[in-house]
Length: 99
Image (cartoon, rainbow, N blue to C red; front, side, top):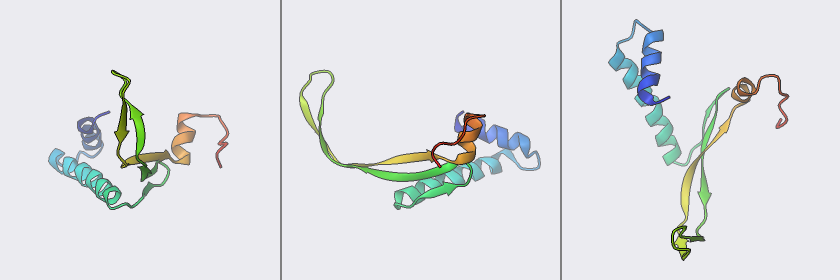
């Protein structure tokens, strides 16, 4: 699913809202998540999952085309951990072994 499809689904479920308002709401939610992550905060949506950022330290890598060693700089990457309800919906009938 892409963002425009999400906007269409939310707009269809809420016919009292204008399409442009639904688009603004979806954009606002995604912007707030992005801003929180950029500030180093964790965003938790109960039942869905949690977004956070993790540090990947600098390391020595390899160019797959040439095989030459290359230096890869330190970077921060987004990380998502699924919530219990989402895991259970994806794996119905399986006991949750993580908790």
